[in-house]
Image (cartoon, rainbow over all chains, first blue to last red; front, top):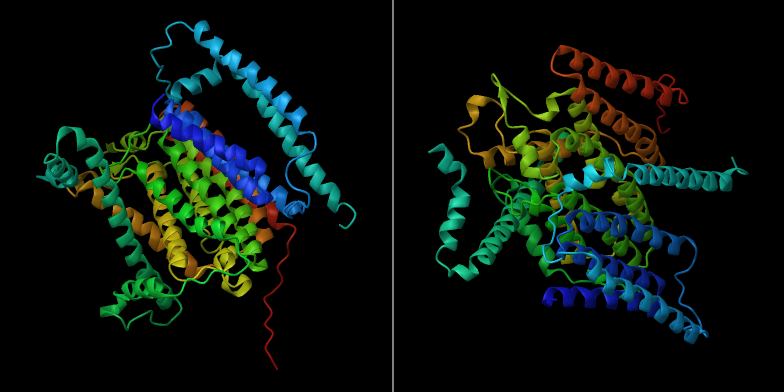
Length: 166
Length: 391
């Protein structure tokens, strides 16, 4: 729990808060990107190099841009007329607190479930690759199938829009 | 003597750092290396601007800048003074914070990419286990700053240019990554110094660079195409094409912010040339075994400058691709070729030594290239060239 962790967590939390409270939607998307960057740096602080860089490459390099394109192409960048907070904020707060309680309970109990957590394992990319090809090959193939289905679906949706004119 | 010259900068750094107390030594070493990277690549940038303008001028049958110094060599100094003293005009309706942050994020992301580049033997700033992934992650971060620049200017041309640039950069990022995956597969590591070491043997006189293998050569060409598109250079420079979109996503930037975008674009060219040298041309290793007396950093910079000359040469030679031609090219030709190249690289690895694997791999790649190209061209028919003159 050193200074770097506190700085990174403050960046992440502030980014997340800004993403829901700012009025301009594109500003919200950029604050979300800052939250992603904070998460990636937290991964790097835990010596998970592959996870941190993959987070930057995928989230900041692709998901953030996807969010921004979606905002721009669907006229969501106009500022909302009646403020950013919804009328059912109390229900939202209760649900968010319940989810937070469950996750916090799970995280705090996981320390007791793992023996010898003092030694941080140095996981190299080679071990991740071997695990993906060995023990986790079935989830890898299922994810590949899911990604292919998503891509085909996107192409079909895009083609259907132009089907009348061409 | 040759090894001393080779390691001279490392030894210099150790000598300077040894004057400081032991506690400060790692930080001082890192600061010194970072300062060296910035100084070296910024001066290379200054040299490249002159080289580009003179080179393009000569290719277009005119002289480049020749007023400022001998052969125009002090032109970057004049450009720098101009950029620093120009008024910084920000449009009234522009989004101030995002407009200010865009060039900063662009430059920082591009400069971060230099941290893993092995400039010479033992001369990389950080030896990360996932070094190549770090480089591509930093490259992906530049796309967001391009969008920020275009959107915050509240200018239709800027926004169009930014959208085109982001679409192009995302489309070509996949072939960029896939063509380097073939190299990663064969070297078995993501760490750049180790990829260079895997290419540093010699059979007789000839080096073991990956570009001299069939799959490596195909990877090199595809990586080169994707590198042109990632850095928004001709023939893929529609986002900043002057005849189309004024200046694309940096229309509304003046003075030093424009200079920062310019620097960041050229530094991006340098870092991607550096990665291409590391992955395909053997990094800092010498081309022939009897030339290893020349220091390793000299070979690295020579190869990077050859790449820069190729960038400038192609800019002066090829016409610009239209946006839809560019995207078609990426998704329908380059990406399938990179996937096939992965398969061929695997085939090469498992076929064992001998002349058979050379023939089989080259045959597969050449056949698919010719057949793929013919299929794509079937829909377009070229008649005899006709000229229309104004009357």
